[in-house]
Image 1 (cartoon, protein in one colour):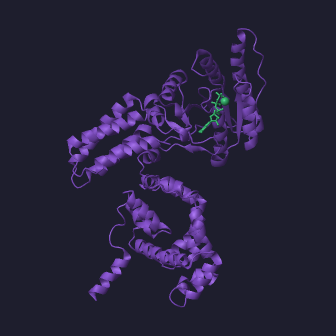
Image 2: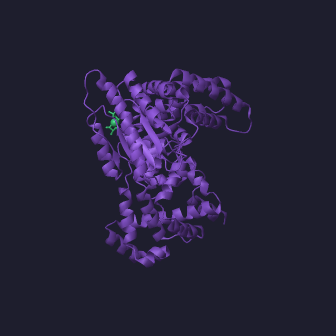
Length: 504
Ligand SMILES: Nc1nc2c(ncn2[C@@H]2O[C@H](COP(=O)(O)OP(=O)(O)OP(=O)(O)O)[C@@H](O)[C@H]2O)c(=O)[nH]1
Ligand SMILES: [Mg+2]
């Protein structure tokens, strides 16, 4: 998603910020590159023009403000304007206000845009996130297989599907009949929902290759008959500006309530996501990011802007972490952490949490600045690299895990040898891990005592942390070779010690 745009925009902006002194002149040049990046991403010219006007006015305003880094300010201006361009955030689904009347959601869109799949995804979302009881209605009578497709989806989700056999196409009136039959099926479906206590009805309508009169007539008839509370346009993001143009037409004819952009996973350019709100005036409600039924996300303009600029998606990261972290356990180890009593059991638990969060690469990409770093360094982290570490920790006795100091010094030697044997690791690996564990513990203590835990979440914070992570030395070397990392800031703990010695 947005890979190409992130690259070009990221390049333009980092050149802009690395220029040292920012003047009106060289800013102009930099902003021209930003403009080019947006056009290459297939954002419509009119949208780009307006966007750049706003960015320029604001950025020039920032030049006057003393005491702030102008380059950073430009990044912030671009970020905020991207957010405004795609926003505001609006994931609301308008609900029926009449008791006993179900909420009706009508999905419309071109053929193959992902309407049926999105019906399934949306119903799953409503069940799981909103505790609703949806009913799916097969209102696509164009394609013979459409009804079965929805039925299969419903079955896999355990959500009921209402359908009727399409009438035979007879002569010229066939098309018209089918159109009104679609409206009739929807009306019957809604009645069925009332009788069976379903509180949301999702209508899966037919699509056409192009917008045509028949399609619009059919959709308008359904709308008139069923008065849906929400008409959402399902749009294929991969078709870029075409998607946006058809969205405009659909909106002119049907006055939609919001857009669901599908196939964002395949859209490296991102033009549709950037233009559709500006062109139609309607907000993006959800995005589809894969074929699987759980691949539907609420659309958060600010997070999306963050992803585009590769400033990381800290909010998503935190949310994701919250989902997998056992809250009580986490609190317990956090308290221990603060008091400096962090041991190998906590460490193991953290590793397990990391693993649950999925492949490290995906996770790291969400940390600010890390996306670029990972790409440059071509580091593939799959979670397998944690296995040897885990094996070593698991070969420790409970006592050793709880009291890491048992493993230190000369007395710990035989213990370390036993652990190496048990885990199949080299003694040096065991020693290395214990050393890293201590360094990490020291760093965490420094950070928490300095009140700077938030620093972990900054790009520099991450860079500082890299060499102290398990396996981090090798990673850091790669990063330096790639010219991405300037290495950790400030003196390392080791050097600190030397200084003290020298003074004495
Ligand atoms: N990669 C990806 N594929 C998607 C997404 N949403 C839908 N698809 C795929 O797009 C294709 C068409 O999806 P459908 O849901 O059948 O589209 P439709 O709009 O109902 O199509 P018609 O009923 O023919 O108008 C299917 O192969 C889906 O698996 C998405 O978010 N990402
Ligand atoms: Mg369909």
